[in-house]
Each structure stands twice: as structure tokens, then as C-alpha cells.
Image 1 (cartoon, rainbow, N blue to C red):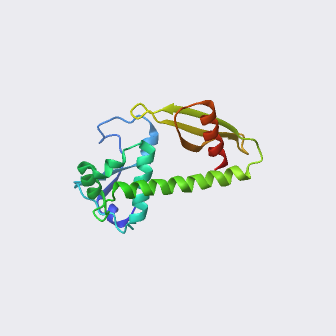
Image 2 (spheres, rainbow, N blue to C red):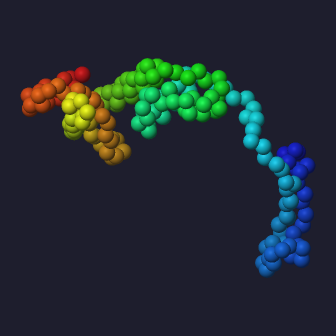
Image 3 (cartoon, helix red, strand yellow):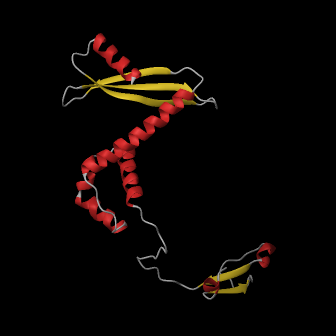
Length: 184
């Protein structure tokens, strides 16, 4: 134990006579009882030296929005701004456009990572598509997903492309969109 902790701790031999609970096993005779002084815990804590990075915090914010599918407008919410300021007063809150650019930067990094991985693969890749139309604007979208088995025999899937499909959604338009997505 450290010196400052041992100043607040009393160690005494365990005895079955002075305890509230009877310990019937002889094993308890080999332990020492430790009494720790009651310490009041305040609502603040000193963390010591902490290095703050605006860039790292922005990246974590963008990752949170991606992971939980939060709207970009979260950076405009007063409650979120207050919460963020209470965690790190030095963080300069970013705008929606900056958040969007940070998310696109992460997307491009991940995209290049997957494309590099796919180039090195020695196996075949199965391609699937999923298409849907948004309910509020009647715009069609297609997700193109690649599936492959890696060197450890684990099925991997990654979205290769998310594309807008112009109307009308005929077989020819869908096929052209798919070819464009695969040739990108």
C-alpha cells in the first residue's frame, strides 16, 4: 500500500471473538482485518495531467454520430453543448458542416482501408445489393455490399457503395447504377 493510504488504515489481527459474524473456519485466523477511515467523496476529482486534443475530440464526436445514427444537428442542441462544455471546457463546439466533413473524412479513410484489403484478397467476393425508396422524397437508393471469407475463415461483409438511383427504377437504370458502383 502507498504511504498516504496506510496512514488512514488500521490493521489488526482477526479474531473470532470481536467480530459480529462468527467465522467457523480456521482459515480466517490467517487474515488481518483492515479498517479504513471514512472518507467523504466530493463531486470533483483531480485527474492530474491530461492532454486535450481538439482533433481527437472532433473525431470521437463524428464516430459517435455515425455509431448511434444521431442527426448532424446534435451539435446545435443546447443540452448537448452544455454537457460537452461540462466534460471539457476547452472543446470548441463545431458546426453541422464541420461535423459532416469529419464524417466524410472517416468514410473516405474506411473506404480506402477496405479497397486496399479487397485488392489483396486471393478469394472471390460475392456482391449483393439492397435497394429502397425514401418515403418522404421518393428517391431511390442502393447499397452494394461485398462478402468474402478471410484468411481465418471468418465471413466478412463491407458496404462497397451507397448510391442514389434515379427514377424510373427500371432494370436498365438499376444495372447501370450497379456497374458504376463496381467500377468506382
